[in-house]
Length: 115
Length: 114
Image (tube, rainbow over the protein chains, first blue to last red):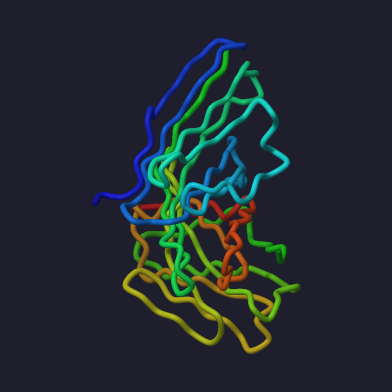
C-alpha cells in the first residue's frame, strides 16, 4: 500500500457546477477525515468517518457539501453549486482507528479552482 | 482544543540545527503534542509526537519541559529539502469512539538557505 490517494489532483470548474472528489485511504484504516486548506492557512477540519458512519461535521461543511463512505473504504466529497470561495486544496487523511495509534496520514490533496 | 502559538517563519543555513518552539499554555492533561511537516502542494506529513520529556526518531527530536506549556521541535543538520511549513498541534490522543480532529494553526515556514 502506497498511502492515501486522492483523485483528481486538480479540478477547474465554473461557478455553479457540481464537483466530486475521491479519497482512497490506507488499506484497513477505519477512520477517514476531510480537510480544506486555503493559501497561507493550515488545514481546516471538515468531516470524519468511522468506517461508513459519518460521526462529525464542521460548521464549515455547508449544505452544499456532502461526503460519503458507502462501504467503509473509499470516500467521496461532493460540492454542489460551487462558489468561488470554495477554491481551496481538499485534503483527505486516514488513521488506523485503534486507541494506540491515531496518527493521521494525509493524501496529496485535490486542488479546486472555481472560476 | 488547546491553542498553539509558533513563529510565522524561520531561516536557517544548510547543515545547521533548527529549533522551532511552540507555546501551548492551555494544554490539558490528556493532550499529546504532535508536529506535522508540509511541502507545497502536498498533504501534511507526521513527524513526531510526544507527551513529556524528550522523544527522538530518525528525523527529529521533540523536547517537552515538565510544565508542558511549550515544546521544541529540533531538526538536526537541515538540508534544502527540509524547507517546508511545520505545524504544532495539541490534542487528546485517546479519542475512543470520538474523533481525533486535528486543529492546525498557520504553522512555521522554514526556509533553508544554501
